[in-house]
Structures are given as C-alpha cells and as structure tokens.
Length: 106
Image (cartoon, rainbow, N blue to C red):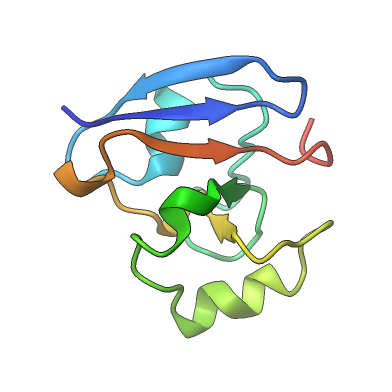
C-alpha cells in the first residue's frame, strides 16, 4: 500500500496509507486528516481539497487536466505546485509523495 505525507499549514504531519486507485483526497479523508474538506466528494467541482505538491514531486506527477486547471483558478493562494487532491490517484509511483495544505482550508 503506497504511503504519502500530508503536512498541515501548522506543520503537523500525517502519514497516510491508501489503496492503489483511490484518490489522495479519499486517503486523507479515511485517515481523518484535517484541512481536506472535499465538499464535492471528489468530483473536481469545489477545490476544497487544494494542496501544494512538494516541489521535488511536482514534475513526477501527471499534469493536471483541463477541469482541474480551471478549478485551480478559483483557489485561495495558488502556487505553481497547486493541485486538487481529488485528482491525484494513488499508484505505487507516488509512494513517498509529500503535500502541504494551505492555511485557507482550516
């Protein structure tokens, strides 16, 4: 089972294990990580699972598709590495992924 780290804006770290095929968002929700609101349930229509992918991982992930790019235009404090956790799929290749959560999602 792949593992990834989610770091809250406060610095609190959460190690999450998730099934291959799940979204990073669902893994975070299952692990009760605060700061991933997921109001739309993962349908890429609310941007409440906004996160910052660690720079060392940004180029290793598939680029965001058009719908995700459009939703990222609505987030507070976007960065170059902004992504929606609902659009990041858990695969063996993401084992060790690090993402950070914005302060705006408390």
